[in-house]
Amino acid sequence: MGIPRIDKTREYMFNEAWGKIDNNVIITSRNSEHSYKLDDFANKKKLKFFNPVIGTWQTCTYVQPEEMFDVWYITEAVDMK
Image (cartoon, rainbow, N blue to C red; front, side, top):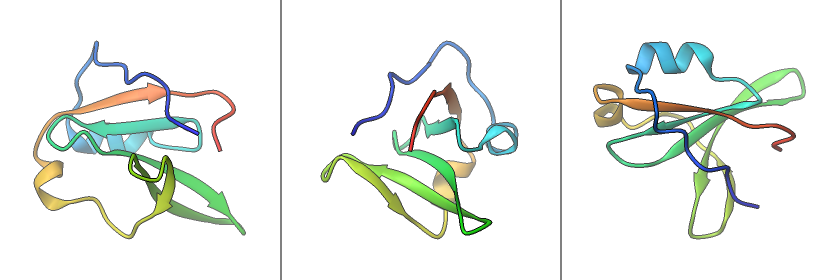
């Protein structure tokens, strides 16, 4: 399962992008091109990033610090798990 085409029409700073992240929103770093989302699991939010090598979402514990100071893209997705 892949991710939808990244919407690069608008750029956001990290704090704005992070404020919009949820189950149906993917944020993507322009710097690294890594995509992140939050998943609900057992009433807890888990941060995940899309690993293109294995083609699926993988749990991670943090966003790379160098990504935080660059521009982000926000992409809305439907029925994304």
